Length: 489
Image 1 (cartoon, rainbow, N blue to C red):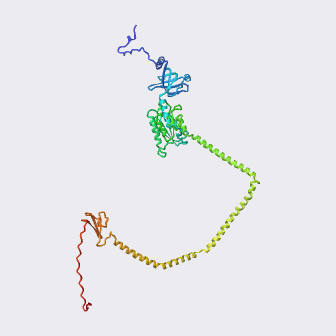
Image 2: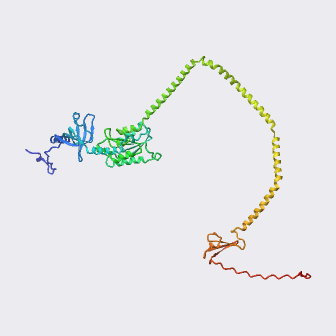
Image 3: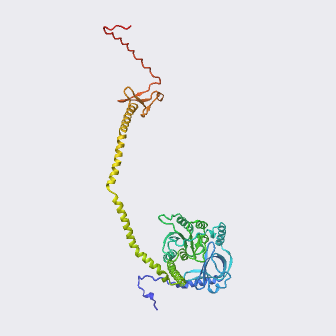
């Protein structure tokens, strides 16, 4: 008997050796691991802190157990939830009993919880409770310090992540209810940097001015979606809580879902169950306002109509108490009014005619001659005054003019800036006039100003050189007496 190898051609490629271990499918491996976990860890007791609880619509509860280093997902089936001694809550430290299994669709392992008992408050919650007590004692939670929210905000500031469903839900809800200006300050809302960025955003909004290039918001919303205690822990920061309490702008906290509670919920002016709920709290409904205004307008119109009808009814009742019909009572006065109105026109015409005749009589006595005579009389009086006082006034003016000219000439002769011949003035280097010798010092440069120019000079010494006495002139000889004239003595 021959085999296939006997007919193989020379030089053909060698065939790979066949493996006796057949390949497994993904499902076969996943379910094999699932059986191994359930057989090895069919009954375990775990102690940890619940960090996230999700109650599904089906009635099952999904949660996460953690300690300081690790975490494991857990599931409580619907039939077991009702029989638990302790209902699962975020932050609660519990001891659970169950079996370890896997979820093949995600290749992850989890614990199926069959019983749960409380083991004490978790470390995070204990720390948070101590901080709450301290801040409450300081008065940061006092309702009297809460600021009132504006009824009709013109600008709303939103502090949240710029991506995700939260900002879209808020913007959509505000635009739907009360279209107004929205300013978004983007921040991270999870991690160590979140509390610092949120605090800086609140302080930045608070430092804006109402009349600045970007107006200060009337209201702030601090928003974030739901998450575990660790995800929301940045909103339990003490510094962030104090910043929220010290802000001048009213703040609505909308962190997490309705069951999530953070520290800023207690210090903010208003807490919203969800970010969408914060938008509803911050804004009125424009359609409702329009409807209310329309309703008030209708009520005002109906009230006015009722008031008029009431007055009309009262008037009819009063008319029934009159001795006669109102038309009969008003007939005679109305007739007198008509008669007076008919006579009013002719009376006015007669009054105008009387005044016109009086004006014509007065105008007849007025003529240009009366005015001319008055002007001539006043001209004659003015001419008489001129003849009487004119010469005297002229003589006085001439005398005062002569006196003024003499004073002007005397003043010009005494002007130190215009020296007369034979006189000069002394000035220092700055041009100031020196009036006494005591103001001079040896070696000082001065200027001697004459009427026709100036010369520089230097003061030699304080003593003055005596001026030589002038040579006496010889006495004049007596004239000889004319001839023929004898001497009386």
